[in-house]
Image (tube, rainbow over all chains, first blue to last red; front, side, top):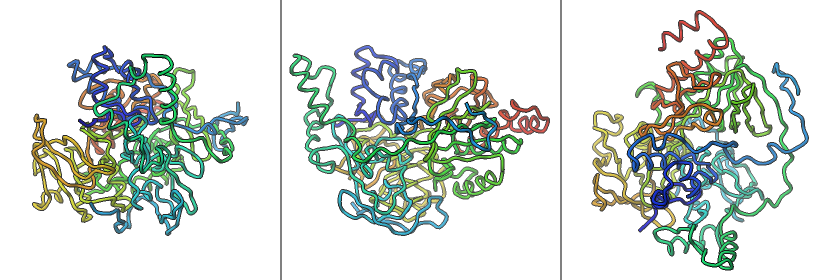
Length: 100
Length: 482
């Protein structure tokens, strides 16, 4: 038997989803928490869609997947240097914004 | 299986590439074209395994090439976890792979995958005693993770800048560019944020035919960008992904990270045109290197002229798979098969040629191969055993797109789910989301085709402009589009 990978970042397989479903994790948020899908480097860009269709198929309706897992920024891995440092925000010369 | 080779680069390719340069890959010199993405240069040089998966240490290689998947991470000049598909290569760059022991190419931890052939249930593993659990944890920490900390001094913090504009568009694909153009034509200043180096979204795909068979995506892109850059109202920032949208404050706030600076924007209105991600379909070994999305293969082979192996199997009924298959045939790339259920009359002209090996009524059951895909097993619909095996060096397999709803979802916009489309942003017929200041258009709000994205983008741009300034001409234009 080989593996059918749902989430490449966290190595979550289709069997893992079935196991989680058997354990009673039957919505996207708890599927995510139990299997770890959507918690990897890509933050669920592809696996959530697979998991949603999996749920809709097993529970027989789109309602089962209606709520996506909670979205939390940042949307992609970002180096700390993007936010680190003492600088104030500087207003762009062309902008009408005011310096805080 | 053929070796990686370079095709003649099409003169009108939107992807820039300069003169030949040399960079270092794990201590040996590798030739590349300056400015092409590092991942493309590595694939062209015959590199097949980029990394190892976190749990089973299965070989990993980029499958999306659009900066979404985790398959292309490498260590560059001492900095770990660099997305090589979004990093232009330059002379003297030093590149290493990250995971695996003794190395990424040959990794003994791969045994975990074979020992746990079906699956490893880590919830129950080594939990019978505390000591065993602690030992297991130490082992797991050693074999998982994301490479080693940086070995060079940290780069200085990025400068931060506040940008003001009445309107911000996130995503410079078909919908986003058209929305921005409408806003600019209405005389409004608009900042467009694009995550990738190149604006255009799917117009960068050789297989894209936004206005029917006669119009190529590349030509449409050139024309659209020329119109947009001629407008003084537009500020287009590429390689600047939006990281967050805060919609519950008194003012809308958008956070984005450019190549050299971090941006905070507080627009009055926002148009979300983030497009969609392309997942791989579900079949056994769908993560084998050499299995890519059609858009990834389009970018690699048609845009950059790099063919990592041959022949290619293209699977799918959608615009992306069929467009790619036609583009490959036109470039003389050998096809192992075209797996589609679309009737002949609906195929692009290049695919109606009897020499194109079409297979109907089948799906991919599993991919086979050690370090790279070597063949696929196909099964008739509803059957679990294969009746057809095709040798191939590349697989481009299309799955329903996954709309990029997250930014707007976090800002509080309503998301709906339908099995056919996935999670999409709920919009009215003028592109308004459930958040009063946010509009959405294109793939992220359910547009299936490039043509639909164009109409939706124009509509959202006009409606957004109208919400900022009432104008009879704008109202007429919007009415004409409804």
